[in-house]
Length: 75
Image (cartoon, rainbow, N blue to C red):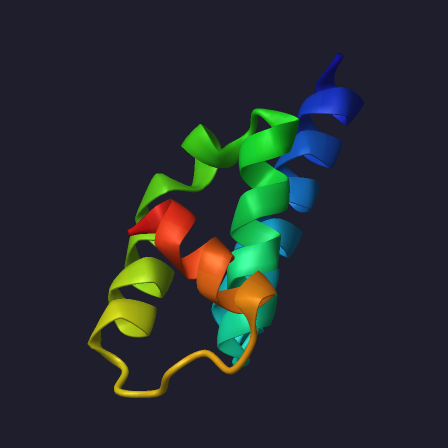
């Protein structure tokens, strides 16, 4: 059981690092969308909120319908 807990913590750190290191906005939204669909986004609430806040305050628009719909879904 201890090895499973260790593995869970390792995976949690990897996902947190992935969330914070992803710089492209569409990729961030896709990652957040995947976490939501997997049902594990609640483990990363603060990281997700920071990413969404950064995207929201960005002045960059989305060029296509897909990225605009992802943005619309989370805002």
